Image 1: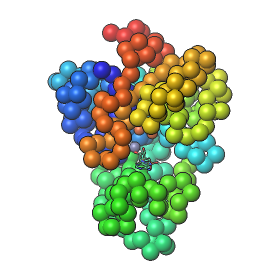
Image 2: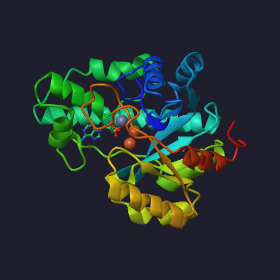
Image 3: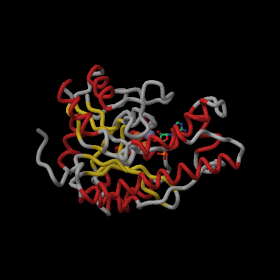
Amino acid sequence: MIDLHLHTTASDGRSTPERLIERAARRGIRTCAVTDHDTVAGLERARLTGERVGVRVMAGIEITAVADRVDVHMLGYFFDPAHAELADFLTVQREDRKRRITEMLDRLETLGVVLPREPILSQARKSAGKAIGRPAIARQLVALGHARDINDAFERYLAVGRPAFIARRGATPAEVVKLIARAGGVSSFAHPGKLGLDDQLAPLAAAGLNAIEVFHPDHDQAATQKYAEMARSLGLAVSGGSDYHGPSAGRTDALGQVTLPAEAFDELWRRAPRLGPAA
Ligand code: AMP
Ligand code: ZN
Ligand code: FE
Ligand code: FE
């Protein structure tokens, strides 16, 4: 089985890279990509664990781009994790995450919701590669009784248009597509069914986008078919995976629940500028 969308504790996942890959191996996953938000800090540990337990771990990332104040998640695969320009870009992304989370905590305080900042911000201070995000705030909101669960915390405070929402700053999807290509990788537009930005797919394809994430837990059968058709008509490859964030994330992202057919993986691999045919 192939799963190209997985998160670890390097961003907002619950499992360390080691635990994640061990779990993936037990689920029968043989090829995967770790795709943390705006960081490659989990890749090497995941890859080493994969060597031990028989899982091929590909380089991956989920970069948050911004289009008209709306977050657009761009997946990257097979790039060089040490690529200097990419590394610098990701450092800036993580800095903006800290800025945004701090402003969201400020905003919450003006709403009378005072959260301890240390547990949220200290993670980023301790490890430069750690990408913090809204789920860290959501967990505190739940722990202190301001929300029933993570989803409720987003609905009440953190989602777009909710009172503590602060917009991100950053590169456009087209800029991210080009950066991933320069780093030797392929790009895929993540879970388009969550966004309602379908009209951006054609211009992005013209800008060099390589794939659409067709297989995702938030895509029902109709959405899966629709995006498979759009990928075909735009000449794009397809990607897919479980978007696993951990055992108790309370979302429909069970590990190994959504996988990518082997032929689709081979086609995605063929699009990588840096590499030859799949081993
Ligand atoms: P951020 O990286 O700060 O933009 O936070 C986005 C992350 O929050 C996503 O990748 C999901 O893991 C999580 N998330 C977004 N919306 C929700 C929601 N409604 N319920 C639970 N988790 C969510
Ligand atoms: Zn996430
Ligand atoms: Fe995402
Ligand atoms: Fe994700």
